[in-house]
Length: 407
Image (cartoon, rainbow, N blue to C red; front, side, top):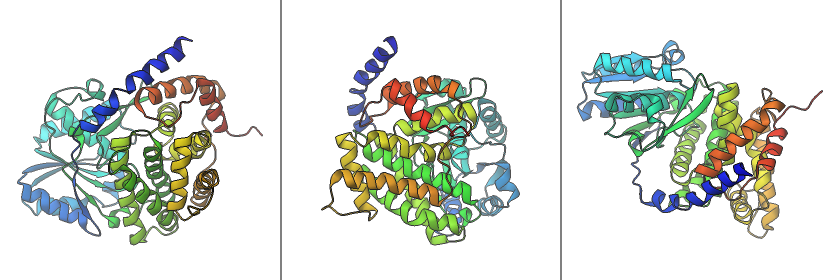
């Protein structure tokens, strides 16, 4: 009973968050798009007049020689460039502390993040640490970055997180195995490059998981109860582009047209969920990822259709799922709303299968279900304007559908 009262209190307090979300100014980065846009961004960094730039990245991208042309382009602008390549997936507090120390020793006056969502998130927090002197633990929560950020630029090498445009950065507590978010408009990069040439070597499995991550951002933002003027446009555009281009990018990593479309779709979805937020899929995935190390995009992809099943009987969600079905060509306005909504959920499952996403999470243990459900409910009911409230019993039932069937 006390737990349910706690959830109710969160839902009541959330009423006051809606007007606040509409008035908080969220900056938008300048965006360079297309082949070699990363090099054009480097030229722009030089034009800004920065002298000492730290490239924050990971060791794999350095080994693959993806970072070297970017370093040379910055150096050609007369910039003193250093590379910190110790960022790992789901960056932990020690990883972030090491990055902060590298920036301090180099006396960097700007940061360029080159990598996937984990790298960009890490660069955001490192930049915030550099100007505030706070630890990652002290920055967790909303509006904790008390000073203007160290100027940040981003070159994503995956198409999924949208971190190059969002106000959030996800960090991991390595002891508690929990993921938390640093949320502040100051975290938005100054500029970003969506360069399909840097995404050609993305393995099919990562292409699939990150692409479905972007789809989850767009769908959850579209279904939520806090729409903004541009949210619906960005969500529908992202969903159409992902359904049309993810199978192509998955089948042929060198398809630059599909790669560029996926990068734009991820960017649009990032714009959307920054304002309209996400929902139960993310609440579950954050807990599953923190506990088992399951990549965030993969957890989202697997969880998405099961949460959509739950939402089908909610009038708002059903109507908007029907809209999305029409947007991807799965029906017309003459079809029944319930039929269209179900058709969209079916298409999500078909898309998952077409890009090799499994239907269950192998690591999920039955004994962990109650704890994950409780933690996910707290996150969702506290933070997200979901179209239908899920009970703890319903949350546990949804999680059990993610478990592998016993042989």
